[in-house]
Picture 1 (cartoon, helix red, strand yellow):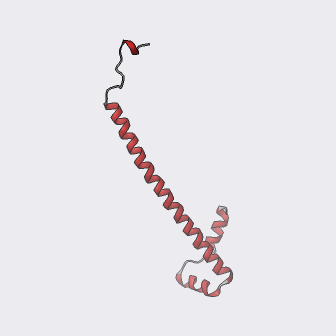
Picture 2 (cartoon, helix red, strand yellow):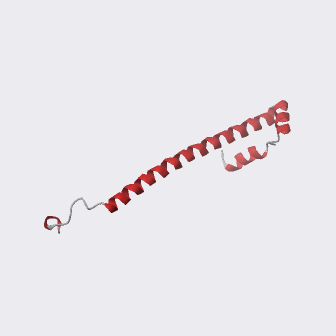
Picture 3 (cartoon, helix red, strand yellow):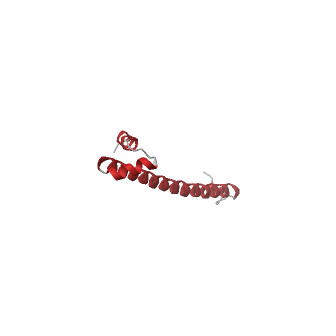
Length: 87
């Protein structure tokens, strides 16, 4: 479904509690629009949650990476320069 279709579904639903009850009572198209909107909102919430989890994981990985790079900058080289290592 494209963005225009999603906007049409969400735009066709009145989210006021009285209107929602009325749409459920009437059935047919109103009820289908309501359930479609609910599915879209639920999927959007799932995607937002998954995104937050990925961001959280990446933040941790970048902190660890940064700490390791900082440690490398503070430690002496693994192979000190000497005659055997010079070009």
